[in-house]
Length: 498
Image (cartoon, rainbow, N blue to C red; front, top):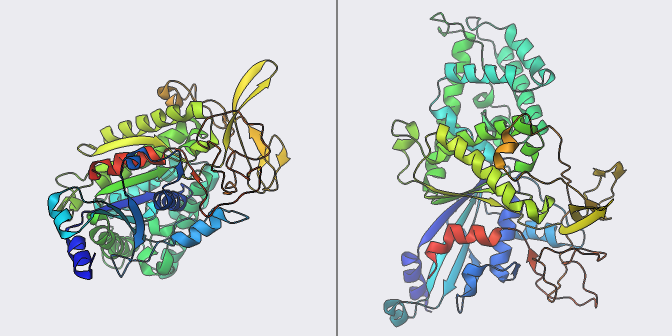
């Protein structure tokens, strides 16, 4: 096709902007890398059924569509995951983007006459979930945010996590004179409290500001030098020169200069969205862990469907029409629990949606492992069969009192998820620490074209089924093992394919 033909084709090529987000350690980087790798090579296992029928399909990367957005470093992440000593990449700490193009022979006479194939641009926009939770701030005053934050600090965590911050706040009065040293110390203690609570449980995502945890170039800026106050009911506590006035001004500046630009420039342009969630960690926190996850989802859902009176309703020219919620690390549990994991997430989303007045968008829940690191194994002990998984625990991980070096494999019984998803929300049934979810290292991605990777099977091999071949053969493009990428892709883009 001529350069003019390419230009004309680009002008009439549909573009779908896919947002990918999730809280830290939810697997955003691995998800994007796995999705792009599977599409570029078209050899994912299991295969993408939506693409099998596309005769003459080509998939390739193209230059960035937006010059002012960093490129998602696909090649670097792929090298880290597929090298001789694979390792999980670092978490997302900024926004990035990648353009993927699908091309197939023209299906209509006009394109055929012009010699133009049919094409679809998929612009993948990766951004930290910590930025998304800031949406709730746009419709909250400083007083409302402070009330929520102080209530949560007193009730949601173990006392030692928020003790220093609460003790400090107890010494401050809203009408005290504004002092920079007080603002700096309060912001530092608040940030430490947020970080420790998130470290204990990544599903705790109810409160912003998100940039307190991922400050980037805002580190030390007055824009993130504020904290919530215990505010009295009497009026005029926010008079000029008071601590309350200083913190309120910085809170409003944060919304104006940090939150609003992100949603105007990036979020408002998205067509579809993937929200990655570490549901397994929430499950291991018992019913309270899932309750926290629910509240976090409530804030997320408000971002995708703002109400008529919401500030965001005035800046969103269109609304995201498909949202995929994905419970990541599905390979940490046996295949028999995958549907149960989806059902638990689906229930959490539905309950959160009712409280946030979510309606209109097509939503679906998936159990997902963007790069499958385990195989299914049934182990018999004392005449009882247990549904286990087998993989290489990461270096330093402990299983049954044994510390692993990141090289040797282990068979782990993580526990069976309940048949009834509501049982996971029942405090009398769902207990803290009742599961044994193990962190596994990435698999050795050496090619095994003759081995059915995607099957659920009992294996006695020395390596997972996608490990080294018996004859030592190698190929340029190894198969990419996953769980659920094909179904999720079909949900998001099936309507854009012929």
